[in-house]
Image 1: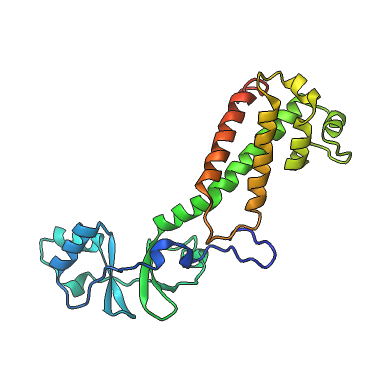
Image 2: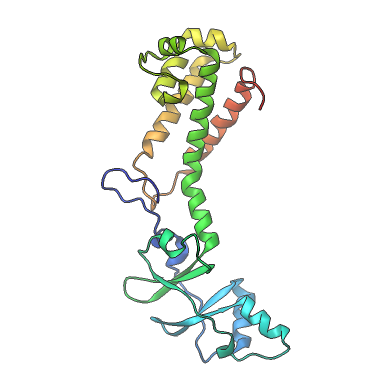
Length: 252
């Protein structure tokens, strides 16, 4: 579960994944032939298809693996012989419950609020969604970590760090907020110690932008994706910091 802020629910749910509500769900019926299944697999490049008696009644699933197993036995399978049980979840189900750590299924079919089977969500879809949600948060965390390391390098004692940040109660750079970091980098003393051949104003502007992006998503919702422009901004700043940090941080 993602962190919660106030009463805003940002738990990742099945409905947040695009494949949970397809405009056109490709399916087969129990009376279809294996040849039709093979044709649909070849055309749409799916690994599984729902077998539906009607739009709301899931009979099971046919997978490429079950079809291949029958082919390897050298027989022309009837569809009924390759239908496998399949999980179906409500569209508002939490992803962590649909795919618990010990789950053995690689996909679930989705039932919408009207009872109709509306889509299919795979483990790959879940991994991709989690990466999109966590990726930018990780970028912010990596940037903050590097900035704190730089400050702890140029202000090695607690006394110096407190003077640089204006915070009398901190005991290490790990306790610094982004505002504290920004305050420290705004001091001429910091730049004298760093000896970076750059315009401090440009760097400080980047810090301000970082703080604004972080604050923008402080109440992030799972159904509101990160702006690609923000992600590119964070990635670019992180790469620049890595270049600059090589001048004052020991190699790891």
